[in-house]
Image 1: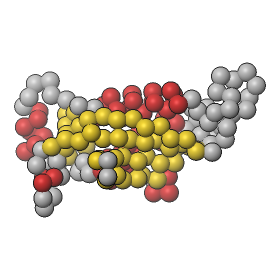
Image 2: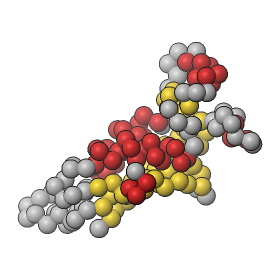
Image 3: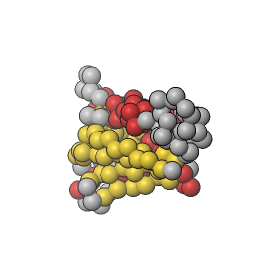
Length: 149
């Protein structure tokens, strides 16, 4: 069985070597989808009986470790020194420094790496993260899949 939970957040970024508009500072309304797979719980008396995992638990983990960290932050590549220095010159600015360029592909992979161990073993039904889909726009997204991890 597979289930998916969708969350949204806003963040800024730039792609330093991009040949067009994305090399400039800008932002997106991102959507992240977390897809988990496992066995449906059938333990009598369990509050999760009939579920793979409670959707509220899927949300709580993704919110704490990805959404709350990235929401209303500027996602900056560590190697983009001019931008990193500029952002760090603003006291209290919410900046997340990444070791990868913040493309949709890299952000999806980063979210997968972060979340994968957090969902494993939450419930005793061999729960596993299968996919993180990150929408940069409603028409553009990247999938980080278990097969890629």
